[in-house]
Length: 445
Image (cartoon, rainbow, N blue to C red; front, side):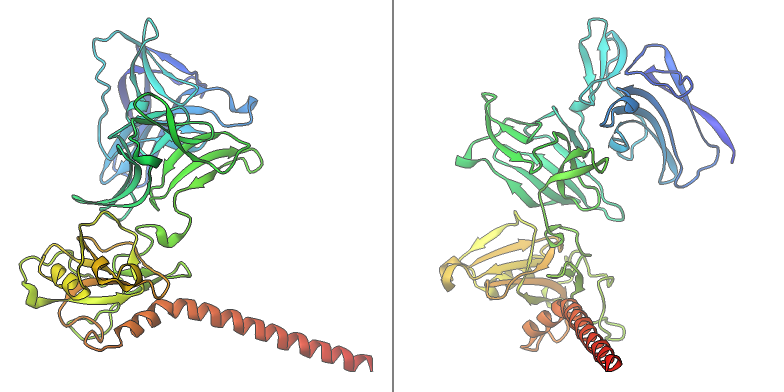
């Protein structure tokens, strides 16, 4: 493999000396990192610059800083990354280049602090720039986030992304798709009190008011080991608080915002239903080409503008909801009216209708969505009806009054197979055991 030296000048750099690291490096030093001359998909090059502490002399892993180069969409992305042991805490956002904006401020050195904060200091040890002010998908112990700041994570193979946002009245998780944003988990202080900032403490995430008084806390369940960091999962979008376990020598979650798979917004593909067994079932549609039943990979239009209402219809799914929230809501609306509201709005792709308390028509509600995601099965009899917009003529037995039965059968097919397999295995075991006992009795006689 042909390599060439790629020298990064980051204002403060260090020459690697036999792999040794320190917690501080000074102006004028540099590091050179070798990368392939030709683009090599999957390539990762990394040179560790600094290390706070010594892993050989302590139980818990220490913070390290690395200059990293990764292959990304035909280019090489270069960045500084902070690691806690083998866990990457900060990294690139698919952007080439990085700037601190500290030119002319008398910066003398780059230092990694005990908290994992990467800082630029002047001769008086005053912080001129710090990584804590630019969070990505991780929040470290002792780190503070003000209102209107957020963490962001990007799952692979999708244009959607997750955010954990600090708002005035709550902290919440959001699924973002283009300009669309829907929450799927939230935590609110009691008595409608406003949040000024949050801070990750040793026992969990603490919420403070404008007088710097702690008014609420998300407590981590593990009370022996202190909290080390909070992370927004790139794959799942779940929020977790983590501690280091000396027994397993790994970081383990002491708190998770969502404890079941079906509460995750992207647990299944779009137009897929997450069942009670945490498996995915598909909404069945008919293809226009040969009228065969399609699967979750069948592409359904993401919007229906320009085709007119005569080209679409609403497919009703009973005992199914979406985990997405914060959609525009109408009250005192019947199910038929709710479906028509979505049909007449070309940007609407799904609607959720609820019958309200004790069948009271005045409490019926209708929520309209511009995104189909996070569909999951719920218990019967809750008075919920989830409707998705589909091209006319593609819904499976849509004009048949047994739509409700079909949905329950499709959703429960995986659960039913599991039950059959378990019962079948149990019967086989009992029969086999009985035969062995009879043979043993015959041999004794």
